Image 1 (cartoon, protein in one colour):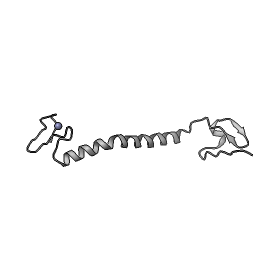
Image 2 (image 1 turned 45 degrees about the vertical axis):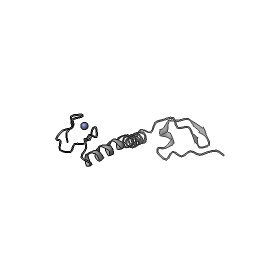
Image 3 (image 1 turned 90 degrees about the vertical axis):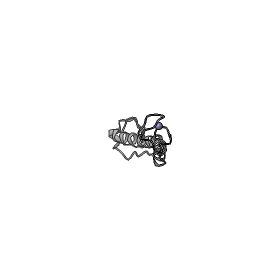
Image 4 (image 1 turned 180 degrees about the vertical axis):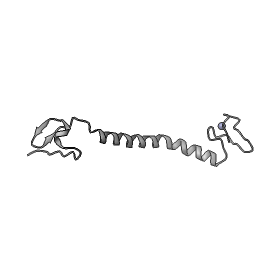
Length: 87
Ligand SMILES: [Zn+2]
């Protein structure tokens, strides 16, 4: 009787953790392919969450004819007089 842990990633002999008996296995080894995939995925999620608001703000400013950097109205201007950004 006991809790059987099936990692689904690697055979028990490759994990290197101690066998606690009766199917229990304490995972103590890093599964590098899974770790790399998870790190890349969550880094992408964090990047999107942090970058998306700025991208949307700059896109809306350009669409409305304003400076993408500071939001100054660029009607009739080639460059932004506030920050020097291009039109
Ligand atoms: Zn500007």
